[in-house]
Every structure is written in C-alpha cells, then in structure tokens.
Image (tube, rainbow, N blue to C red; front, side, top):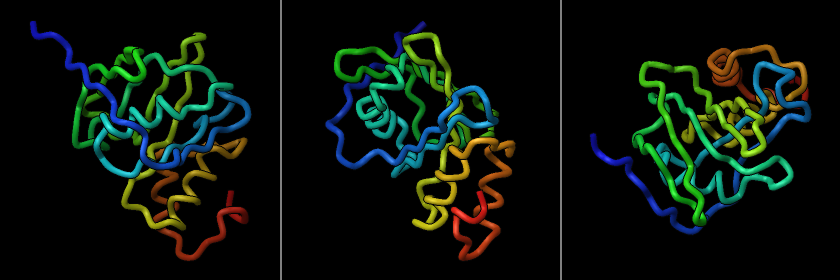
Amino acid sequence: MTAPQIVSAPESRRPLRLRLGRAPGQDQLDGAWWPYSRDLESEMSDLVRQFPLTDGHISRVVYSRPDWDTAPRTLTVEQRVITVDACPRDDTHVLSVDLGDGGRLTLLVVPPDFTPGQGEEALLAGSTAGNRHTAAELLHEVTDQHDADPADRW
C-alpha cells in the first residue's frame, strides 16, 4: 500500500468565490463554490485557507471525481492535514465538506468555465434558502437560460 500523497499548498492567489446559505442542513445545497480551475489541489488549498472562520475549519472533503483533473488523497494546508476522498463515478457536481466541529456542508461546484453571469447565478441559486434542486438540475437551469437576472429567479 502506498502512502497518501501530501501536497503543500501554494499561497492563495485569488478571492474565494464561495456563497454559503444561512441554515446549513435545511436545504438540498448549503451553498456554492466557483473554483477558477479543475486543479483540485490548488483550488482546495484556496478553499481551506480562505474558508470563513465563523463557519468552522475544513477537516475532510468528498468530491465528485468528474469535476476535477487531479485527484489528491491528502492536502496539507497551513500545517493542517485535510483528508480528500473521491466518488469516482459520482457526477453530482457537489463537494461534501466536513468541519472540525462535526458539521457537514454540501456545496454545489460551479464549473470554472461558466461565464460571469452563469457563475453568479449558480452561486446565488446554490445558497438561496429553500433550494430543492439537485446540483445537476441547477447547473442545467443556469446554462439553459439566457440573460436571466439571478435575483429574479432564485
């Protein structure tokens, strides 16, 4: 058995595009995250480093493998080891985030190639109270509609 890969995270380089809902566990999605690339090592390092401290510390992540080009098993970010697991055939476009306090968040992963309008709409939809769409349904709605004002839809 080989040892898990440990990747030291580079310094954060861009603002975090994350929007969390107000009541975790109450809706289908607890928020949405819009990474800049399909490099999970780099993007996860930014997410862990910039995650709002008021919402806890990330301790473990389970991701949908088709969303990413890389597949780390462990990350070390600011001297903390984060366990990273993949669901290889899962194409749900979600990231399940376990927090150090025992909480868990289900985040929509917005594709990095979305236009600014699509990305903002997906961030809003994934974090809106009362959301009942799956991540895949939500992404389909966002890409199927043209020039929609997110505030009017979600």
